[in-house]
Length: 199
Image (cartoon, rainbow, N blue to C red; front, top):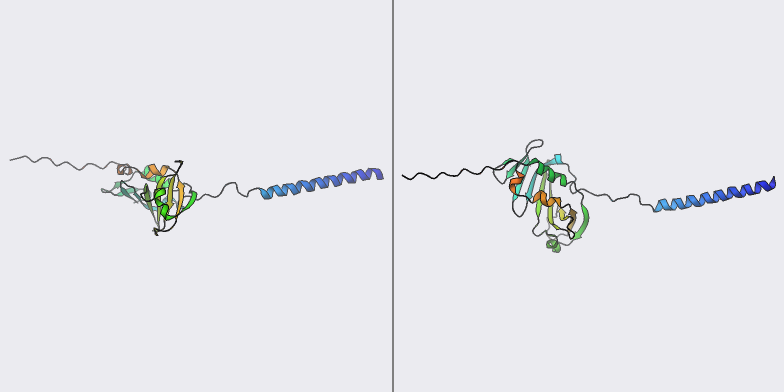
């Protein structure tokens, strides 16, 4: 009986030792594993479409002022004459505001022109129902042409360092369009004066 008990005790000791080694290694691996698989990405703007009261889109070609008049009705206020805005184009722009801010870069103000902010592709000012104003300034395409350089809510100090993000290239087509496309219907041409009959 004594000889049978001794190998049994050794077998239990070996199993306990193997279990201890296993749990020790498993604990090390789980401590090394990252807690989250991807970093948190912030949208360009955190407000919702329903909070927007008006938009001003400035490009090198024109400035378009659009205001919300009803629950979902948008009107082009400027350039004159006023008229209903193209809802699909306004909605497309508002949807792009939910795009992620990518690759934040800190840039000295002296390098503004390298990123296209001396003559921006476009500037979008957004007025909210609570009277807050937010601004998005769009610069050049980035080096591999996969995005546009952008500044979100730039500082009023022209010498302040710039916080530059990469935003989707879709913003180029969203803001850089003829004034006629912002309207839901073409503006009628003014009537031509008829030549007066000579006496």
